[in-house]
Image 1 (cartoon, helix red, strand yellow):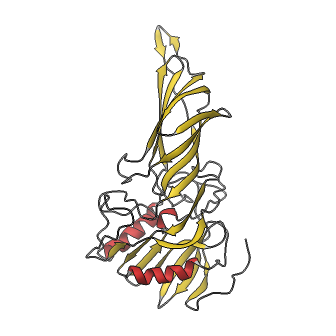
Image 2 (tube, one colour; image 1 turned 90 degrees about the vertical axis):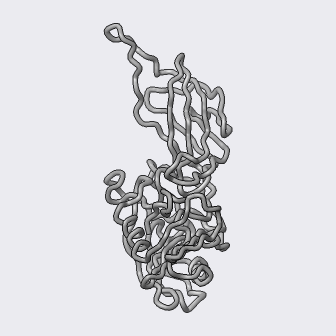
Image 3 (spheres, one colour; image 1 turned 135 degrees about the horizontal axis):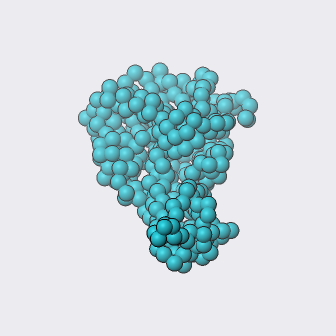
Length: 321
């Protein structure tokens, strides 16, 4: 923790304390998702079409609007210290901030957001929410980036609301987790990727990795085979440049983000490799192909998009505020 807050640059932004934390897998807690959706429904908000152009500002009669990205100080994604997380040690940074509003103006929200993101928060521990009071009656919760800056958050006043960097908002990881969807889950995103492993016979395998993240493009990752399978060589890759490094498959090359989290529209890489340990056996005259347990993929670098990727037609991405 960095200690107390530095002097504010604006008299309209005032600290008001802090609360709670988040957790371990990339799922959205139902309670916080429901709160956001309930707010939007209460405000009568229509939600953006999944094919809206990145950075566009679709208007809505009911008050929801995806605003133009805000340019500001370079933010650095908070360190994810949970070793089993998809984003353990991942590098994610940008000088653009996604923003949206409900029953409020984009230009007004941008002015307040620029004030907030310029300050160092009172509590800089990754994942810790800081309560702020902004402008005429807005109650806000802001989250610190790796440098303690207010890189993401949410503000509300009556039926008016605005958020920034909602797609990369991170609530932290506690010391223990109750599992996916339980107490202490990371309310930042859906699963960041999908993997499919197919045996081709003769010690040959095909691995398909597809981007399913609401954050943005996956630029590099490392995949470790399940127990019992030892990779001997990467024979080909389509969609990224992959090689065998330290017994794992390491890939470089941007896998584009999905157009909608409800479809398999994200970029993918197909990797062919050889391995030992997965041979079939014979039992009672039948060939038995042994299944594998878990494998592990660690995302090393991502390029975030400064807009919300919808999770269903006419709904916002499932992020928690």
